[in-house]
Length: 166
Length: 141
Image (tube, rainbow over the protein chains, first blue to last red):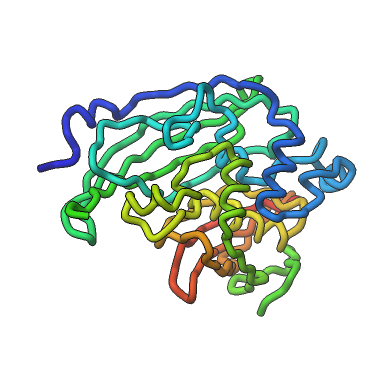
């Protein structure tokens, strides 16, 4: 039986919009760098960042696309609060296949960032484990309050059927 | 050749960046999950990962992007701007495991006002591939 049902195909093209909640903020930037063990002063020292050509300290390059700070509402039963499509896929586990990022300028603490996710495509392909699996590709576009595009994140997730009998 | 800081004016294809290592303790996974507002139990709850038929809490694959970006900023300095970063997952990594980060200059272009460097980067665990990336940076002159 195909995993890629007509019901699932109807999700292709859907959008999810997350308006800016607040400024990214210095604390979030410092926290992200701390969590990575990255002591680069670019992420905590305005003077150092200005000498490097930035107007103020900046966020680590990929923070904008890794953070779920744009999320609204409470976390789900698993503790997840970021974007998810809640696709009608049963008996599968979801894993990341890869991401493709484009960045257009450094993110500043004062940036208020809105995110729009679009479900670009769903395909079904053979799995090395036998059977098939679903590849779901989505793209997120991150903009500041003026509408300037800061980053694009194209993400591919794989839905693998769980083995039965365990 | 491996160097700790790379000068884009003289960088050459084949030049290696300094190798890095990262071990992911449960504490590291909780820190990263908290800092990214991603509190999914997949990254710290071993009872849940057992039900998902996984050998333990899973390192969030998004962190690999941060590790790849950090390697190039460390190598090329604070003015290096990551323009593109594309990575593909080869294998999952679990709590307690260590990955090695390597990077090699693939291409160097000299625009009028900046140097553009394209790099091939890899994450491995015990010599086996975990993820690989193609990264492009812009370094203004």
